[in-house]
Image (cartoon, rainbow over all chains, first blue to last red; front, top):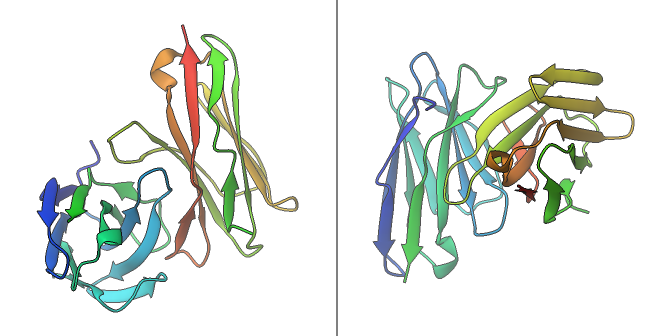
Length: 112
Length: 110
C-alpha cells in the first residue's frame, strides 16, 4: 500500500459526457501526477501538479484538465468524452517534483 | 523511435533462474530511471530507482544503468512464480515528466 487513494474505482460513461476523477496523495507528498494507461500500453503522462500549480503537461488536449487543493489532493476532469478515453487513470504522488512517484490503485474508465 | 523502448515479451524463465529485462531511452538529458512492477489489473509498484551509472542492488533485484549507451536493465535473481508480472521501465526527464515503456511481460514457470 502506497497511501495514495483514488475514487471511484470504476466508472462507465457515454461519449460526450464529462467525468471527474479524484486522488488523495500520500501524507507528506505535495506533488501529484496523472497518467492514462490504455490496455497493453505503458502509462502516458497527462500532467503534474506541484503546490496547487500545473507543473508540466504531456501531449493531451485541453479537454483534460486538473486541480490540486491546499491539502494536495487532486482532481482530473475530462470533458467531451471519446471512446478512446477508455483506460486506467493513474494518480501518483511524490514528495516533490523530482522525487520517486508512488501510484494509487487507479480508476478504470469505460466510455460507451 | 519511441522515447522508452522495452522488449514486449513475453519473457519466460524457469523458477530459480535469472530474469533479465532491458530498456533503452532516446533522451540524453534523462536524469532518473525507475523499474515498476505491474500485476494484471493492478497499478504499478516501484521496485527500484537508479540515478548514477553502474549497478544498484536491492535483495534479489539489481538495476544497471549506462547513460552513455542510454540503456537500463533489471536483473531478477532466483526468480519466483510471484515475480510473474509486467515490468515497466520509466525515465524521468526534467523531473516532472516521466515516460514509460510499454512493459515486458515476465512469466516464471514453477
